[in-house]
Length: 504
Image (tube, rainbow, N blue to C red; front, side, top):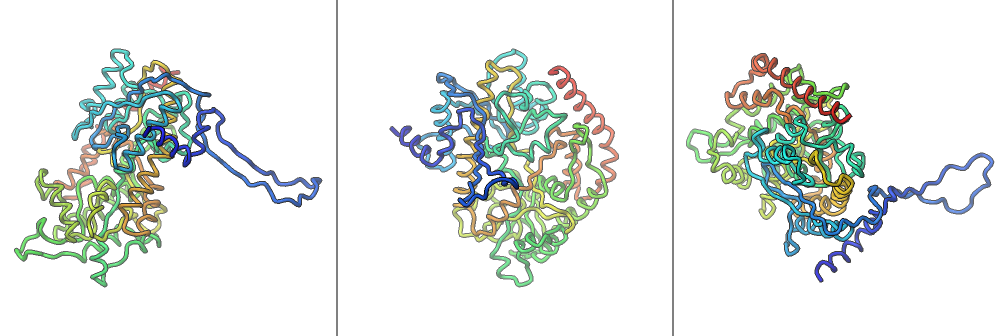
């Protein structure tokens, strides 16, 4: 009975879904301008309507087939597991999507969850091992996978994944697929992994800045960052100026530690987010469609100078990963922000829910730009925590797999994304309309770095080494890492080229 009620509710709110599987594609009604010899029309013009629909089989019925999704990675989120009795809005949306797939296509969405912190370690990762086993035995263990980033890169050049551009019914140009992911991750026309409305993990782990509005209200010297963002003036220099204004030895013990007040609370991953925010990447897909190292240049030097000078000031900035034992990371860092002992908190959007039930008045903004001339505020999708859609090389039924993958993404746009963005993030966790405005800035300018995903030459270690040594020696480290990174990039490109030649 509950399933019937759920279907009726969905039918009432999602009318286009009732014809989504009819293979009719997009419905477009247009009115062309009249020609010179056309009679004068005195009636009201026809309106133009565009309804985007997926191209799916006519009346698909997969007879209760269990469509198994492998979910792996570091961040404990599974966008395919839900109970009909859950009171959580997102879980309800996941369950409704599963019900829709069962009702519309006759497939039962199931999942195998092997998520574990520390699992995204390339060839040692659980996701890689699972797909390698499936490939080696030429078996149909999984229909689709949501794989942690580092595993995804290795799986791609190992040949264990299908080029999604070749999968029947999947159209990565549709709005339910992330077009930024396509632009940043497509190699020689091949898309072995991507993301979009099919899941929420990439949204949750997008880097952002939380800030304490109460501290700004109390201190007339502090500036409202919302206005700086709108004016295009939220830069590393502007942020450093604000951070430098807050430093209080709360317990008066003549030393600065987690018990005191700072202008900035940060962590190691923020350096890679700052690189992306400043308009640079470790590696980029160049015009030839291959990975090119873009780590070291004048822009990178400037970003590193500005970022490290801000975070190395121990009087105004606190890195919880180096100053707190790992067992206490969450307890102390959240307490520092909750108790108004830091002005800015570098985090991902996952942190927002932590403070949902607090009285704390906080806002959300993107990372700063390098300078005012930079066009966009770039927000990196955290590689360590993200998951990507992949489909194993071997499939029992390509048409069925492609149709279900596309339907999962389409219904995700109708159900999952609104449940997260409108009903949860904006509806329950935001404190003001300004933060909602900032979320659009953040999501519209997300960045994916293939240098991080493929872990090219361990270049990301340069950033970590700078932080651990509290020294900006990017230049000298680059001289050490350069040749191994170039060899590694060449190897990855060659392996991906071999896969392309085999498919052709």
